[in-house]
Image (tube, rainbow, N blue to C red; front, top):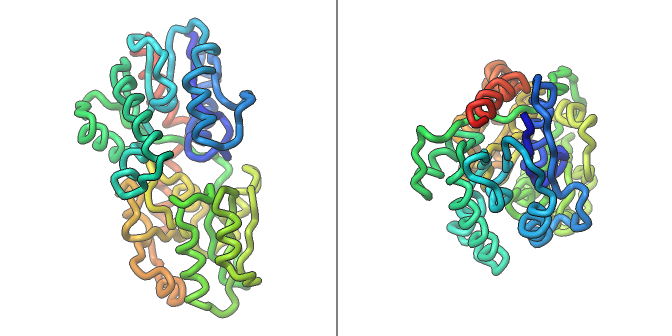
Length: 332
């Protein structure tokens, strides 16, 4: 069976889309009789981490790179425009462009992305099979676009299998986060809370790069306890999570929130914020904070580490493969 996987990226560090696409490919690549072709922006001339470059890839590059396949799997709605609906599968990670717009993020760029995304969703839901990565996304598709819940396959993504608790003891109370540093991730809230808490013998580690990096550094006021680690290679992520006492994910909205699951796989306490829109079956496993500075100062973040570890370990390539192979064979 020839399967074309079409995605913005198949690199783990390219945000949630890259992680999902990479882990899907890794989970199915050795399946007997699967011949998998990858189509992505990874080898494109336009790779400047810009939404406009991504739109150029979807509109102009994808149709040029498509080859004859038995099954086409668009790993986001934006890649589904040129696919034969009868031979296609679409994965929908989230409806963030629409929901963020409703929350007041109404810049010209946001308006353009929302409009294009809505058109893409309307095309995508005509696909033979629809995959959502969480019950939350499935419900959103039902609410916003009238898709019957029974027609949506909910398949959790896998995480890397090198995440494991190392049970290290730390001399310094260490708080950390990692993400693409943009406005939606709200790392500024974490920095302000850390400075306000002013905890003795503590430090804050911030991993990742992004357009907000310089602003966040200014906000940190050259405090020596705050360290910006930059891009953390995949092989160093387990070490990063295990260097922490608590992982804080202050994002306003996520389709899933894989860093939360990765931190849980390392046996770490996780804090999210009370106003964050994160799938509730994940968010409810974290400590949900309404006063972050106080919770950090009082070290008030008691969650069920043992059960969270079991939950994280369900995010395996084997489970993802089992569910996805059924879908591929059903369409072929």
